[in-house]
Length: 144
Image (tube, rainbow, N blue to C red):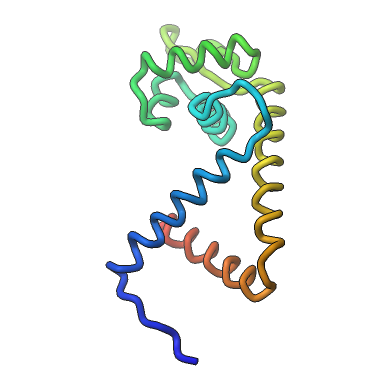
């Protein structure tokens, strides 16, 4: 059986749409709670970076600083984020996730991974191998 040749310009929108839809579905697979997607995203960015200034976090999340101020305030209210003085600039603060924030992130990650693992379990071994290889290629593209 010969592989069907698909031009990159035809594959790009199809692949982008599939990734977007899968990402949306995985993001919906979360424990019941009152964290919004934007709050969870900000908490995830802090978890990945370790610590950021509010401006850096707003830039990473691609929102305006006033919006990030509101998001951080909600996360602080719940004890998920903490502020510490900036080591060199007294006008700034550094944001980082608390132990509670890291625990919430772990809970969300477990729920998402569990949902996706259940979906993958429905596929054949050959299809899972194809997706494993596709994941490697997608990581390669993302690093380019």
